[in-house]
Image (cartoon, rainbow, N blue to C red; front, side, top):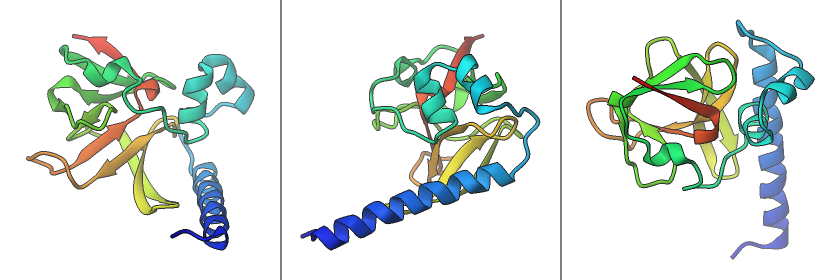
Length: 157
């Protein structure tokens, strides 16, 4: 049973972890940098929340979850190609999932939240938050790159 004290502690830990993660992103350098105002002009509110504030879209809300045409998934923030449709699969989680990114497309870092440590995935060119990677995916990598659909755009082949 969660006590009030425990709930307050967990909420505080989540805020501290989020602040820490944003601080780490601010310390990194990226090829494409923009001011907050510029990002807000370029992105939809949902894209801004996910890509720039490390939010998460609601499961099963993205049409890209069920997109299985041939093509490439790009960063919605800077248009960098990130994932090939050849590595996409239905993870059943409600988010577009891939077993491997394209070469030199993404970077990862530790992401501490209420549920403990996860591995956050971001665009290597603009630093936009894409989602998380887990060790429960299919072979040959065993990885599940669980991405927010709103952080991606799909380009058919």
